Image (cartoon, rainbow, N blue to C red):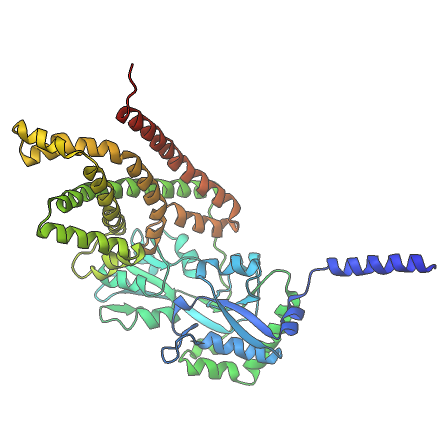
Length: 483
């Protein structure tokens, strides 16, 4: 073989080697750390910030991953990620594994590689004290709360209940105590921390079902899976796993019993998914229109009060600055949860009220600017004709100001339409929330994302065109050319 031929073979071999995907286990050992993802919003005892040392994450899963990493000869590094985005973030390489109450289900096994179990949990049903319900079978047609993308969610979808989805573990039990749901089904770890100890609630003793927490990895990471299984097996054999669970008051009789096998829950058909998706779009449009009506009426009132002066002006100015200077998310939480002891708004009403009150502050500035742009001679002429202040405002000033404000109002409605996605935090399943649920069911964001964007565009694009037409027409009417 000539030197030239040997050189060609060497280049081909190197190219083939470079084309092979890098093994994650080798990368972990090379960098000296195992990156793992979790959501600290889940709170104690999973992974959460130590109150005594802000910025330092602690929890039983922190201890377990530390034990795994130590047996791999590396250090563990935590990466915060919202619960709903853990799997997509893992797949795009933001971290190496997921360890955050990840449940072993057939649906997850279709997407990820899963380790051997490190904890056995029970699905626990919580109800109000004095409730007539004693089992899940008795809740047909009733409102039952749970977290999205959980085994409890899968179990409830196969039953004739009115399913209510939440983003955090504490909120379902707040709604249960307030009477907005009839029961909550969640892991016993969550139920014990947030529900069972509440004065007005009780957790039923029987396990609705059992499941296991596991570590999740990408489908191509078979070697990493074997290494993690070996580490967990060693931790169970030498007692470290039990000591960690005992430290966090999680060790119980279930941990000594054979791990359960999660039941297969049939996914919804595509036609059903599309119907639910369109329902979400209708909810978005309906609550956006209703909220903008509230915002417009209240905005006009605030603008007029601010123009009049006096003590009312101080109140209106304070309102505008307060609602423009605080996050809409915080306002929704206060309206829905903090006011529950006084007014128990349903989710749709709270969403309309929250969006309407927030956008009223912005609309008032639009109307105030429009009123201020009118010549003072308009008011003087109206008074000269014998019109009262109210008649002048109603018949002369407001109609002209409305013409000026219409383009800006249209833009604000488009903005409100998109901001309506935030109301999912108070259990409203609107278009964006339905998109995330559908994406999980279909195990792909591409089609749901395109459909979501298309529906938003179908609603907002005509409004944008209307705004431009109004601007041109109003500009032409305000600056007429001589014939």
